[in-house]
Length: 329
Image (cartoon, rainbow, N blue to C red; front, side):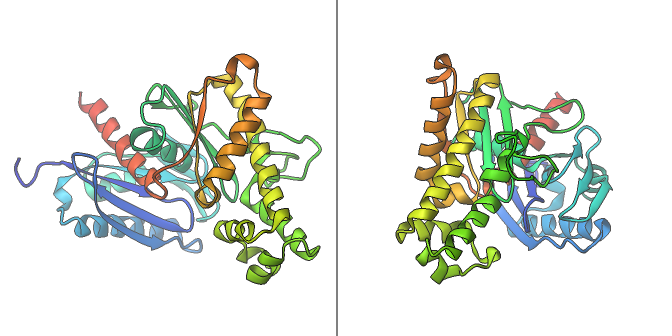
């Protein structure tokens, strides 16, 4: 193979508070990476410049010349035009109508593809992690919201133009609290990390969570997933109850999706699950089995995600490779 063979791929995760780029070789193994913070105040032009720079850094850390880059995949937050590769709206970045696919193709001279960041994380788990070999893999990722994605027979399940599987906006409590989307009782309004932390603060105020009170006080921004896990380990029964109730609510929502898709593998991911995998897997699976039709109770298995932050970038790179192979075959 000559030195100019295009045999490397880059996966990029634009979601969350950090940008992560990972370079992968022809065997889909990570060989270089670079990370930078997301800056919501900067415009899209400056943001794209930093994306390009971060990709170059990942290639440099892998000692790979840009001429060997075969394709780029990007996991993006917000609504997308998947076919045209346009990021329609990313509120956390302040970007609208950004032709990200075209910008990256112009910058690197190779094909690029974009996808929803949760979809791409589920795809990463399907290709390389907890959902390997699944016929239908469903992913649910509780975080600030609750994201969902599905890989069906090797393809990301999507709509005609954009992504789907917005499991966080299934209504599980019609008269429940108001969700950020404006509706009442969405799954993420009652079972996301933000909802859990809000309930935890109330428990601290009531004197029911002394370990969490000592560690974090009542500042919501201090209460992260690991802090909740330490609180449970220290004996804060009220916090454990809040977490188990949230996990069981996710399980009830999962039961509705099982009735529609009959997934054989359900992957739970995100910081909460990483911090307390057994609690979430056990409660979600138990609640879902209790709520589904009897004929569906034994068709699925619930597993914790295996790849962490690498799920999205490895999935993005694999999707880019799949895309290039399809257009060149």
